[in-house]
Length: 121
Image (tube, rainbow, N blue to C red; front, side, top):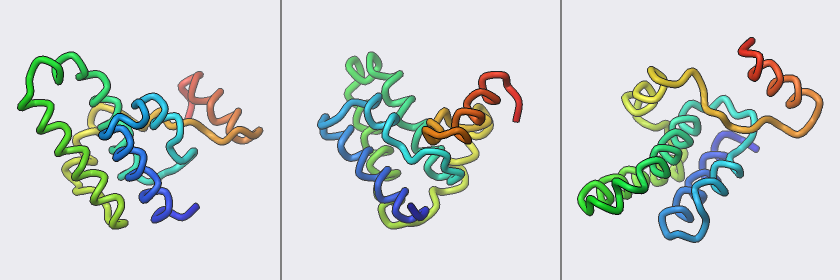
């Protein structure tokens, strides 16, 4: 799958979360595996934060609206094949070395997961 195809696919996952067709967990489990696309990594973190803020979203309608708009923006940018703005990518990179996107289900993916578990690059 090319980077463009991966971005379009992730944009669709985000939209499905926003319309409550799938849950965040299902979306992140379906992210393209072993991708090195920083825009997709940032989208992954945005979805995880969306899920983590569920209680805040329920209490604060304005926050919910802003977070929904933010994910819609990310979806739109990815769907167009563009990179997410650098400030969004850097905002997540300063807290996370990488996204916990699953690895391929083969020998190479097993060793990548195992080395990540051991905290070895």
